[in-house]
Length: 355
Ligand SMILES: Cc1cc2nc3c(=O)[nH]c(=O)nc-3n(C[C@H](O)[C@H](O)[C@H](O)COP(=O)(O)OP(=O)(O)OC[C@H]3O[C@@H](n4cnc5c(N)ncnc54)[C@H](O)[C@@H]3O)c2cc1C
Image (cartoon, rainbow, N blue to C red; front, side, top):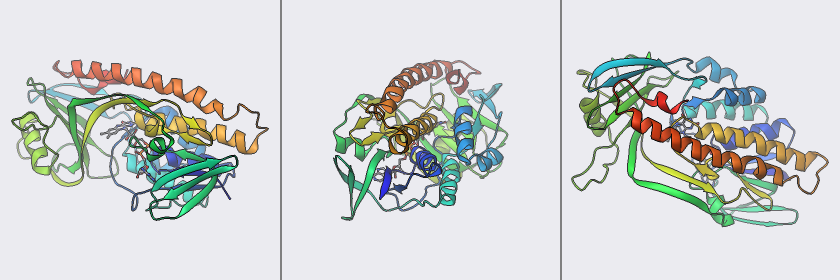
């Protein structure tokens, strides 16, 4: 019998899986994807997250490949204005963090089961049954919904996701090569029209993570991301002749969402990571908060499964992490406002969201 069924193999689900497997607890990890992704997404690991990965035995490659102390190079209307050091922690692509955790998990005898989308959940006094899209079902003592901001588990449990989505403020993002552009800096170009483009070198790869204010149609609607659009944005904001962006391996769009789950537990099922809270990326706290959630949920489930479980043991996770989620939402909203104001001033950039 599986002790804990983990739905979702992002950084949150994989951290939880390693934590529980290391304690000898039987886990299964299901993911609806067809396989691992290679998207840079959350690219900053805070020192606490590095420490959490080290406790799991998954930090070695991350620290070997990742960059420390990258310089943020700020330009305004094409001119280089200032350089500032990035904060503490390690810069590395999210897919590389996931790869390190997946390999650690495989070493503990657990492999992620792909093409396994959870579409139904029922529970009774002794366990949880998850129904999959292909008709199979999986039974476990407990389940954890680590299935991201659009969490099916959260919806299936009927848990609210209160907050707001900013309809107008959007960003296009992606991973591209930029041959000829120095990889020694996180380049941040802003212009007096209020727009900008950022290119951050992802270590261990030839790509940069690109983030930019989108092109807009005459109606004001943001245009979807494309390589040609990225090049036009680069030419408009960076004004560096001769650099041709190439080989996009990820193209996406992002908008500000500030939302959190009304509760983190329904009976034997828990929520963690983006399934429980989404917020602005300023300060880079999303993946890191998910890793901290996973560590806390690992402790709670281990107490319930192996400790002298008192009646309140399962409440410990929500008591710790729901207030933490509320703090992160308020904190990242304030950081986001600081960055929005800062980038209008020559020489300032995303470091305004780090403090
Ligand atoms: C441009 C950008 C920059 C960012 N920068 C940072 C940063 O610097 N630092 C930081 O900490 N965070 C950052 N983030 C946020 C970070 O990417 C997320 O917070 C993080 O991915 C959340 O991890 P998770 O494991 O909770 O969810 P996800 O990574 O979303 O993983 C959820 C998984 O669940 C699977 N799934 C979904 N539904 C189902 C289902 N029904 N059944 C089975 N599987 C399912 C999905 O396939 C997916 O693999 C950034 C995000 C973006 C887009």
